[in-house]
Length: 270
Image (cartoon, rainbow, N blue to C red):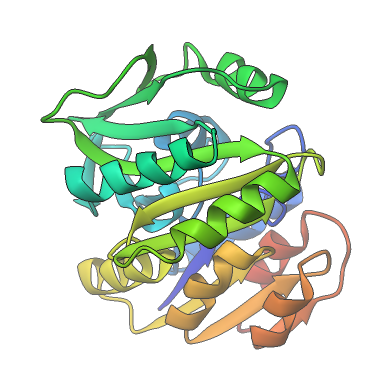
C-alpha cells in the first residue's frame, strides 16, 4: 500500500480552493484500491475540511506546515508540535525590532485561537476577513494568554520586508522558518515560523507509522514542500513548481493543469 501525500495550494487546488472532479476521482480510486491519501498543507483545519469534501476516506491531514496532524472524524489533533513561550517571545522580539507584526496561532482543544496586535497592511486585513467565521478558528486582538499552546506565527508583507524578517529569525536556534510567495497573489509574501520539531516530514513519518504504510509518494510546488519530499520514498513536483523543488523531486508532472496530481494518483501502478 502506498501513502499519497499532497500539498494543497498550487498543487492540488486552484484559486477557488477546489479539487477538480477528475483529480478527486483519481484520488478516490486510489483509496478504493487500498492506498491512503493525506493532505499536507500550511493551512489550518478550518479551511482544509471544506477543501477535502470531495475525497472519500482521506486520512488525517498534516496541517500548519507539519505543526499538527488533525483527524476530522474525531475532531482533534492526534499529533502537535508546540512552540515554547520563550521561543515565541524571541519571535515577537524580532518582529518588534523590524517594526512588524503578525498572527500567532495557538491551539485550544480542537480549536485554533489566533492573536494579533495590529493589522499593518491591506493583505493582513484581507487575510483576517477571509478566515473570520470559519470552523475551528477564532481571531483575537491582543496578546496570547500565558498558558496558551503556541504553534506558529504567520507574517504577511512585501518581499523585501519579509526577507529581512526571515533572515533575522533564521539566526535564532530551535526554529523552522519558511519564506515564500503567495501562489494566489504574487504581491504577497509569507514568513511562517514554527518550532524545529514541526515539519511536513514529521507529519509523513507519523502517518506512515500510525497507519502502517511502508511507502510514501509526495506532491508539491513550493519551497515549504522540501521537507515533505525529503521524508517520502518518491516525490513529484507539479509543472508550475519552483525550480529548487523540481531539482529535489523524483519526477515532474508536466501536465500544466491543477488536476495532474489526482490523475497521476489514480493511474499509479498501472
